[in-house]
Length: 615
Ligand code: AGP
Image 1 (cartoon, rainbow, N blue to C red):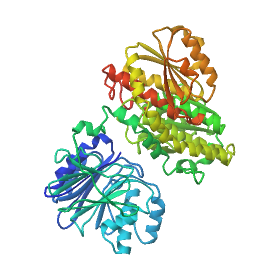
Image 2 (tube, helix red, strand yellow):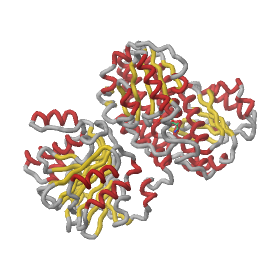
Image 3 (tube, rainbow, N blue to C red):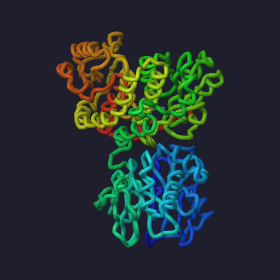
Image 4 (cartoon, rainbow, N blue to C red):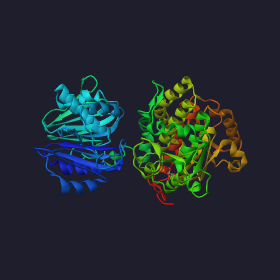
């Protein structure tokens, strides 16, 4: 996610902002920038790369004077990482300068309108549109910056945490929040602005956290006044006295990045379908797909290549595409695909899935497919990554940076993107009528709230983890859509707790694995009420009769499995094709708690790297 930092007060702003950006580096970013007001003008420096690069560039290129300034680390969503697309952004007049964390969904229509009014743009970003919209409102309505921001934000659809100032009125900074975090540090005759408290905790532990749809005009020597963006109602700020240390702030109060990222999944899934899933209008809007629809509709088959967790997301997608869109799919380990001399034609569509966008085997598989004429579509989380640049088209997940080596929110957001693609193709092919299409769109919109509910199983899962933390083996079983989830659950457990775990199709048990079952073998079974439920229940009975310990993930209200299993974890009901987005949650939590109880390094497990950029 982007990081924002701002300062207005009696100290030099530059060192505070630079250090504050360094404190936010953990959020992941690809470029950085700063703007300072030196008493006369705004001095701005920005660059692709790291904060260190920004320090080197700014110290050579601009005056570092000033007690008012804003800074930004950018995690690209619109526009590739480069100097021009970095923040801060000027308005056309050069009077206003803004930083922004979030996504403006309707930036395209706003940009077109501003161009008609003579505005020009140097970047591809939604943020540059926003600062010029504010300028246009300020000019046209003849209002002050605070009011102009408020009016402009009422025309915006999307998520934002912004800080903006006007060199014509350099005694104030205006901030506003919707969807992305924004904290104000309240010091002695000085104010700090940041995405979290880490940039200012050394100066003050008094913080105001803006709520969604709140804004503030921060003026030196004045009480902070919060307003509701929508109706101008006054909101009264509650100043919190923070007791968190730096490390706790970076992890959002969670003990590990992995747990933080597990809990970010409702927001990450929402951000991934934001602006793409328009359930009321019955539309799925994704440029990478819309511009290449014929290729998908005329494809002989879809080949999915990926590694690890992304490969499991690909397996889920196989069930979704074949079941809903009736398109033949094969899923390949990229590392095998690239060497087995596969048959590929120009009637094939290859989908490459990769969180990092840097996995060497996946990149090599893409190049092979392109050489043989296939159309290649990428599903990546890192904008401008090698895979994103190598593919012919793509759709980004908007999970935000995934710091924990064990992939969690990448998995669920990859499935979200692939579900949108499959639903769009099912509709375009006439397989889905409007009713069935609308049912799926509406249910997909319900998923973030249902993931929140699934996360409420955490205390129960922690108790179960304590029972099995010393196991030496574990089996994961699932059928249909949840067979890949069984594989993913097993991968999670083995990679962070170092317990040997295997995932199997539940029916495959009797072809071998059942020989492993005894009273020492915990078996995690996904037994939701959709898709061959009764058959999974008989698998559970087979395990029980051999004294296996059964941890069952069931649909809330299930009684039948409750009578058979040793432990039952209930998740909300949903459509069969969407169950993986929910069944994976307790399995992520189970692996996390077992790993913590075993004293493992959850965020950086032994022998593993976050991105395998070598063969
Ligand atoms: C999953 O938890 C692992 N971190 C690993 O299997 C990962 O999914 C795999 O290396 C693929 O990475 P990518 O999605 O960045 O290509």
